[in-house]
Each structure stands twice: as structure tokens, then as C-alpha cells.
Length: 226
Ligand code: SAH
Ligand code: DHB
Ligand code: MG
Image 1: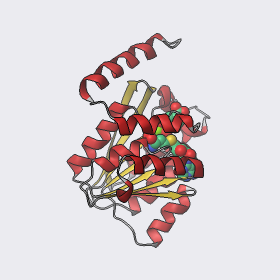
Image 2: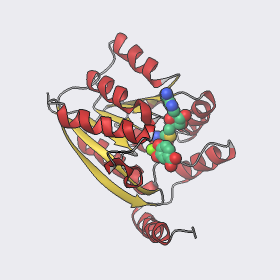
Image 3: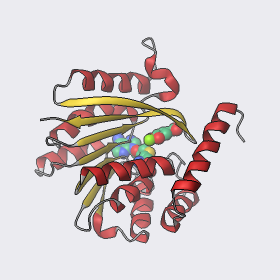
């Protein structure tokens, strides 16, 4: 139980639905356990959110996925499993410890051949991917430092094609996103992302507010039209 009755209620529903809809999953469970043991923060997507990512990847028929913000590879495993056997995830992580834990978790999940973890600032890695002529990606999940979101979105567009789906996590921030007077750098950045999505003729975008074990937050969902 937390100190917050709303969070307890949202968590109870997440647990009920998670037990109902998601089979027990040793690879994901041990990825979380290994991440905890290595001292990584427990800020990965929730199990039901992981399933949503997998559903979107499968519906998309994605073969090439770009993830920005790997942590211990929990979301990476959900994404990679939803790919066909010849599909690939490139996932970008600043912290070498996080990247090493993620690599081990991905290998342990039997997905080592489908996942490439690139270590370094995501901005540098994105520029390198563009310079290497990589992409277009079919599906892009943005989930690293929030202040980077505007630049990540701009570079993600350069790595996209017509039909690419771009998802960004943590864009509602306990509702603070609606405060035009916020001085919080994370809120300012997600508001800038929202402005970019609103003004970018290449995308059709929405934002879904979410509640659950991670509290009150949301996902931006953008489809690239051209
Ligand atoms: N997608 C993960 C959670 C990512 S948490 C999951 O759901 O399982 C955010 C991650 O972004 C952290 O591991 C953090 O180290 C990383 N990060 C922070 N700043 C970054 C940067 N500039 N470039 C790349 N990764 C960054
Ligand atoms: C937090 C949650 C996230 O999903 C994330 O990507 C980064 C931080 C958090 O709760 O602090
Ligand atoms: Mg997140």
C-alpha cells in the first residue's frame, strides 16, 4: 500500500488485469530482478504497457524498431519479441551499466541476435544512425531523458517513413503537462514535443493519459503520414 489511495486503486486494477491477461513470464521477471539487483531504478514500462507496445509492433508488422532509453531492457524485450525472427531492435542508452544489464537480460531472454544496444548520449547515437544511412524504422519508442524529447522527435522523424509509428512515454507527468506556467524542465520539454506534433504536417498525433502502477502519466502516439 502506498500513501495515495488513488495510486493503490490504479495499482490494484493493473495487478488484476496483468494477472488476467499476461501469462507468467520468467524472462521478463528475471530481467526485472536482475535490474533491481544491479541497482537500476524501477521505472520500466508496466507489464500491461509492455503488452500494448508489443500489440502495436505486431499490428504495424514492424521489422525495424528504434528505442531511445533502454534501462535494463524490459521494454526492449517486449518490443523484440513482437518482431518476426529477422526483425531488429536498435536501442540507445547513455549509462554503460544500464546497457550492460540490458544486454545480459536480452541475451537471457533469447533475443541477443535481434537487439543491438548502443551506448552513449542518444543525440549522438541518433546522428550516427542518420550518418550511417540506417532506417527508416517502422516503430520508434522514445523513453530516455525527457528534456531531450524535442530533439529526439525531430531526429526520429528523419529516421521514419510513411507509416512509421512513434510513441513517447511520460508525456502527462501527473497532469503537469497542462500547466502553461510550469518551470519544470521536463514539463517544458514535453510541452515542446506536443507543440511539435501539433505543428508537424508529417504526423497525425494523439496523447493517451494513463493510470496504473506507475501513477498518472501518458503516451504520445504519432503516425508519420509522408
Ligand atoms: N524504456 C525502458 C525505461 C527507460 S528509463 C523500459 O521501459 O524498460 C530511461 C533511460 O534513459 C535510463 O536508462 C537512462 O539512463 C537513459 N538516458 C537518460 N539520458 C539519456 C541520454 N541522453 N541518452 C540515452 N539514454 C539516456
Ligand atoms: C520515470 C518514469 C519513466 O517511465 C521514465 O521513463 C523515467 C522516469 C519516473 O517515474 O521517474
Ligand atoms: Mg518511461
